[in-house]
Image 1 (cartoon, rainbow, N blue to C red):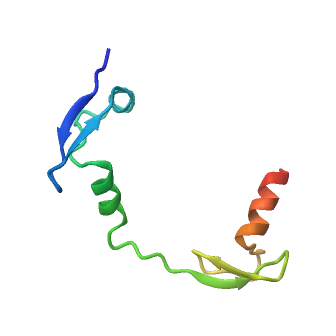
Image 2: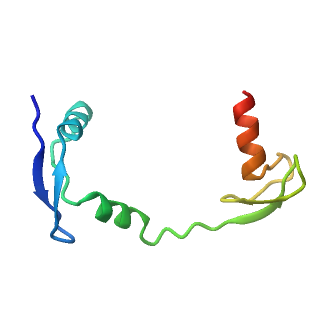
Length: 91
């Protein structure tokens, strides 16, 4: 049905493969245009200028430092990465 296509990135000029699976994904979503950038350039463009601000809070479980990408509020507990991951596994 679909076959891999070789496309040229409009940013870096390198060739990249638009795989059959990606083409099927695009068709399922109704996308009509092929990608114009390779994955590296798409990722760089997506992340450009998006400096996330991190806040520091005290983990409600272990009391350690938790770095979080949102302003903490006093009405909800905040967990460090390790405690949060452990809690997710228990569910």
